[in-house]
Length: 413
Image (cartoon, rainbow, N blue to C red; front, side):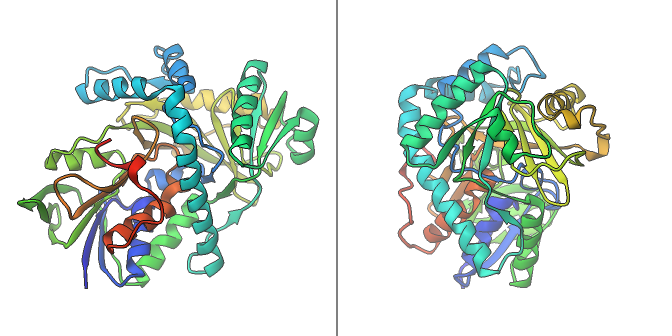
């Protein structure tokens, strides 16, 4: 039986374990934390084939430059003399072109729809127990300028074959008849779904452990030992782990781990926050409040999760209260019934999304070491792309032809 070690127990690593286990492999998942506080738990839980424009785009570059010195803006850049960060910025700036966007749209669409279909299969099989809602996603706006940008993006999505409707304020209120958000209008991406990320993670963890997968918690990797062009074992805080194949799915920490093999991944953290509250009025549809870059995820029982912030390059764990306050104020502007939310420090989650320089994930074998694979760099789409990434990595590990062309996601691009 093939022996596989996966470093990183987030949603990508666990879905990789889930698909490989079906092929009969002996699997150990090692995580630096306790599997309860990663981005996979605190993310927005959105499955978004609508997000076909990569993070590296002229619009995001422009937004980053405009807010460069504002640490509490929805998108900001962490200023640091860190050489890796500077290199990432330079590659990001070169990639953020109209040509790159045009080339990436069909790639992201294909990968996202593949993943969405896998979610549907998993849910229908009953092997994982988590709520999955098919309500689409509302992109809501107040500013006419933001509205114009959303209409341009909607036309791109429509041209790419996605089902999209533009909405007036009155039509938004027909959908959100209780909350009645204060908006100028919106766009309804009907291709999108959403789920409860914490319930998905708990189900994955329980199912994997019952199936015989070994989960090692609170265990940092110290060293990868190699022999010629093969990695042979891991030295960790909890001993040495041998393997036939090694998979690195450790978010932005993947870069640090692979540096040992002299592999340079252009990945930087994008720090964000979220919190859950019982709203004064029921919110029925997931939404992105475009003017403020705030995600809204209804989770049932009148509980809604709100999240926002993208501080590129920030590795710190300190909660920036001013940024959380900006999210709270934005919620009140869009949903007047939720003005003045009181959020205790203990309610606030923070996490670091792994952002690649060009907005496409890294999926596949690394150069030089034929038994080491990586799956990271998913930016804000880790949950969306997790089943697809896990499935594709499992096919590579088994020597099968991958279900998608992995050239755009190669590590040495």
